[in-house]
Length: 88
Image (cartoon, rainbow, N blue to C red; front, side, top):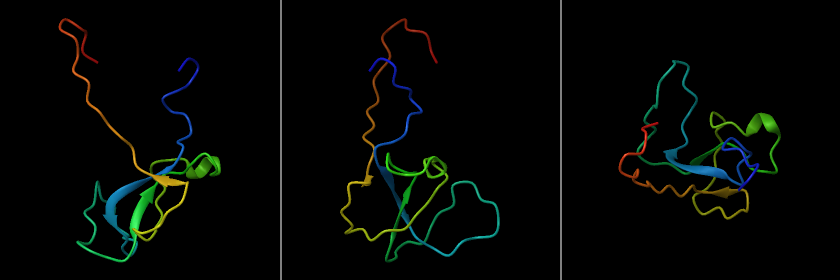
């Protein structure tokens, strides 16, 4: 839509496949969480969140059975480039 930034505030916090675990003190890149648990980890904020929470680095914890208008998932579709289109 015209005037909408790709970095606009998300409509919902995004579910991840990770289970919640105790905070680690060491710096890790894409750490693997535990294989099972009680709570899943949503990330980011929603349109009702304060701006600080609308970052992908923000993590939370919620029961997988949770139903709330502020939790959801992102649908991603890979669209093939047209022949001869410049690469990005």
